[in-house]
Length: 254
Image (cartoon, rainbow, N blue to C red; front, side):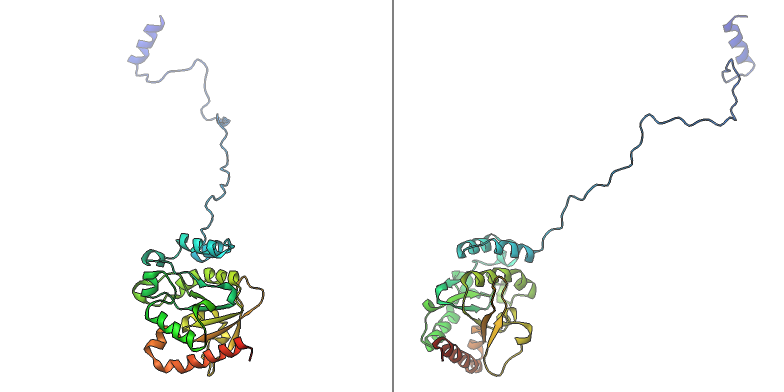
């Protein structure tokens, strides 16, 4: 019988699977065959994204790179880590002669400062000129700067986070101008600069040593009422006058 006839006979008998010529032991354990490609254990991937710096850390870095007042002003103008920059009309920077050795630091810019871009403008600026004149001084005799460069929307006080972001620029300003004395106008300004133990209200004005980042030696600071408070509450003017007399005596060496 030929192969074709044998195959047809097996189909007629119901065979549905081919047979090998040699017997196969299907119960025998088989040796596993090696895979064609050896699987590799995945290597750990080093993280590529470094943690982003906080706005305050970015401000410290930007301010620290400024070696002149012009560079510091440019760094403030380029800084985008404070949302106040987006709502303010101008960044208010320091004015005056650093050689005088006396730095007045005011509160956050108001509407007049924001509109003009100059520190101590409008009604508060006119009052400030009278205050200086009362002790025989003018703006030419001092350096002036705001607590923060930008006016908060609606003239509200800046919140602690906004002050913290902007403080590195003020600290760098103090380091660059190297004043012999600081005069702090307003409660928030004093609380941002004075040490914690000296922030309580004193019965009489007094000089307080302040440690400023970037300065080797502490700087004596005198806290006075803010200009806005003097306009609203004439009773504050007695404390301001007592502080101004202390300032005048200190400058005269008395």
